[in-house]
Each structure stands twice: as structure tokens, then as C-alpha cells.
Image (cartoon, helix red, strand yellow):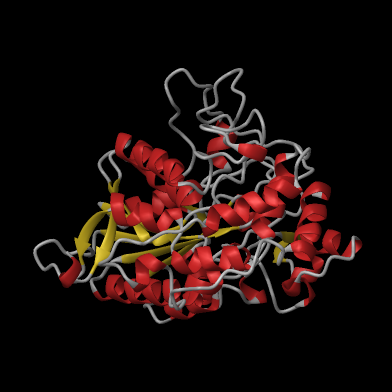
Length: 441
């Protein structure tokens, strides 16, 4: 956490230094949303912003420090990048198959379908793991998600919303011990999926056996930022709770009949991470086997049906916080059990983020339930490092072509990275689509 927060602070102080760039497009949502029929023009703004910051970070090898610095920068180049279209906007336009919103021959939803909305929470939109382009595209993204929820509900589909939900010393947080996950892990691999250096996010404290979400000033992230006298706006807000659903999502879910809505919590065990709402069970050939404990403590879990009935529309209120027994005990209901009980034949996955939690939920569902059809709506998810191409890696850690100052031309935030994730989807028979109006189909 020290390196992350320190370089966030430095970046906040320097964030206007990469030049005065004019915007030649009015910001009205992500480009793939505001102009879905036209190929994004793209620009060099994203790369300009990242490379300018990397020049300031020469000699800093700690990945967490570099990640923190790059995500924090909001200079004019990064704003121009978001407005003109990121690598992800270009990728979605070029690579995601179109699905006509007006199609009557191939309806998206019916009563055997579940719309899965992954981790659309405050910390992932505007908090410690914020979406870099949310100020440009967030409101339109939320509006489109609300409309999709209404459409799914009208067709009789189930809506499942997941919540990332971590203790303050969770194994994925910077400065903590590595997670114990073994799924798809091979001996001797240099990089492992569940060895991470994330800033703390979506955190709760155990209070008298109840998991009480932390208000922003109480979180490990904000306490440390305050200790080094770096002012992050949301860290001063006691009404900002990172685990909370985005208010627009909470309102949309509350308008759906209780019988059609499920909320699942994931990542609540201190020693195991779970990007996926589906439990870890199957593993790649040649990888280490998944232990029973990992199966029990990964994936998403809903409260008992009676508690869910009482808490519909009140998910972020104190009387509906989950207890330790509800998260770890026998009365909980797993994501897999919910799909089976509701006789779901197809899931449609949206939310945050494309290359982690959305990806693993989709692929692990296919692994654990091969008869279930799985779609990902690429225009209704956003990736990590959106508009921050090449930033997450340092010398020796780049997945592909590396340029000056450690800029990784094929690393996170790049079109090449999104294509590799797409290939993972294809290899697991997950359909990646984007919704378009009839005139664009």
C-alpha cells in the first residue's frame, strides 16, 4: 500500500503536466455507446498520457507503484483519450459480434435466462479502483444497464447482481500475504492470477458477527492516503461506501419484482480471492488441483431466501448487512445453486471488469456447467486500465512488445490484451456480443 499511495500522491500533484490538448469531440458517453454505428477514430492521447507519466517513474520497478500512478492521472491527455475513444472502444467495435436489439427471431432474454451484473459498486466506478474514463462514460453506461435490466425483467429473466466484499486485510490487497488460490496455477509460473498488489477496495469490518461495510474515511486506502497528507476527494466523504451498489443500479434492481432478483457476495474470505461469481472447481490440465476449502470460499453466495425477501431494495442498509454465519454457514445459496434452482439455461454477463471478474464468471460457468450458454455483452462491461494502455507492467514483466520507459505495447489496457482475453472466451465457447440498434445491425 505504501508504494501505491505514495505514487498516487505524486501523480495527483503532477497530473496537469502532460500538455494542453484540445478535445475535438463532445463527451457524451463512451464512444462505443454514443456512436455505435461508426468506427472509433482513436487517437494517440491515451499513449501520450501514459508515456508522459512513465517518464517520471524511471527507476521505479514496483508494479503496485506504477499501477497507482498511472490510474490516478487525470490530465488533459487522458481526458482527451476518454472522449475520443480508448483501445477498448476500438476493440469492441471491431471484434464483438453484433446483436440486433430489435430482433424478434433471437430474443436476448426469456424465463430461462439470467442477466448477471458483476461488481457495479462505488469503489469500481469512482473509488480506489475507479474506472479512469467514468466521468465521460459512466452515466450513459448506467442508463444502458438500467434499460437492460428492465428488458430482462419484462421477459421473465432472473437478474443476479454480485458484490465484491473483502475484509480489510484481504490477501489481494497491497502489503498483505498472497492468496492461497490454486485454480489454474502451474508450479514455477512467473505470474499467477491471484498474486496481486491491489489497493484496498470494497472492504468491511466484522462487528459483533456482522460484516459492516467501511465508510471511505475508515478504509485502509483512505487512512494511508491521509497519513501521507494526500487528499483524495471521496476519502473525506462518510457517505461514500465502496461496497455499495452504484445508486442507479440499486434503484434499477429495486424496481424489479423480488422473485426475479438475487444478490451474491464474493471474496469475503481473507485468504482466498474470487473474481468469479462462480465457484472455483475445474482447473486447467497440468495445473495444481483445487482444494475443498477453495471451492467452499470462492464464488458468490446469496443470503437465505427469507432474508433476501426482507432485504429487497435495502441491500446497502445496516439491517441487511450479512452476518458471518450467513456468509460461511450452511444456509447460504451459491451462484451455481441459484442457476440450478431456477433452471437457467443461459447467462448474459455485464459489469466490471471485462478482463477479470466478468471474464472469470463467464468462463468458470462454462467449465462448471457445460450445458449453460454464456454470453458477454462487451458494450456493457468495461476493462481494467481503460484508457491507460501499457501501464501495468515494468521491465521483465511485459507480456509483449516493450518500448521506452517500460511502456508495454501489448499489456493491460491495450487492444492486444483485449484480443487475448477474447481468445480465452472463444476457447471456452463464450459468445462475446455487443447490442446495436437495427440501423447498425
